[in-house]
Length: 254
Image 1 (tube, rainbow, N blue to C red):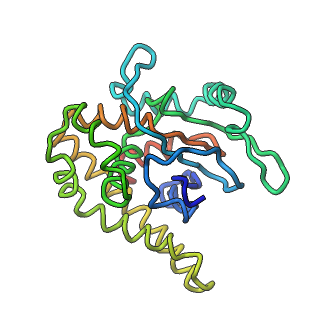
Image 2 (tube, helix red, strand yellow):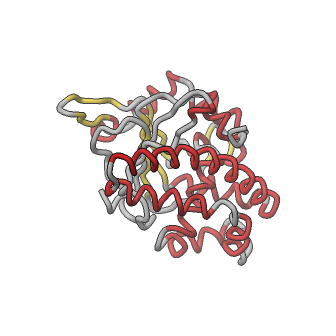
């Protein structure tokens, strides 16, 4: 699994148990974003994120993906019937997996090639920050896309300054995840507690950084997020998305 960029997380409803990034495949980090995607394996409850080679923006329902509002994205994403249609539109191998001999069907599948509008700004922004500063090869893969959407030549340098408070938290989170399997029971309990705290801190600081990035880069950032970044991603959910949790996250967990 080390060659695949995949994360697993559990969606919880209240803000105080907002641990969206707690149940994560710890070996899925640090993989080059141009790695070929594979169908999910294993039985972790939550969400799997796959990265694929970047592509150009598309329109959905007559509008470009970056033109949707957050409320529209959440409403469409949390529609149970629409989720069932999305799952039926995937191949059998991509929409189901075996869990201890039991076939488990995904509750939802969001592909950036078909529904880029369903990703939320915080999800795509975090993908960019993680990729640009924590993953090898990301900058080379997206260099031409950055220029094509109209972002300035100092985009990455400016983004790093904007993310000055955000990046240390992401680095700490990744370090804990990468070593957690080596911890004993007591250390693991401490690590899990710290990851839970980090989830909230990251949620708040990410929101602030995203606002600053939007103020600095304008619609060019949206074109980048909902063009090549969104279309290079696929998410497999074991539970339907919850509007309250998604809204809480987009507001910075406040």
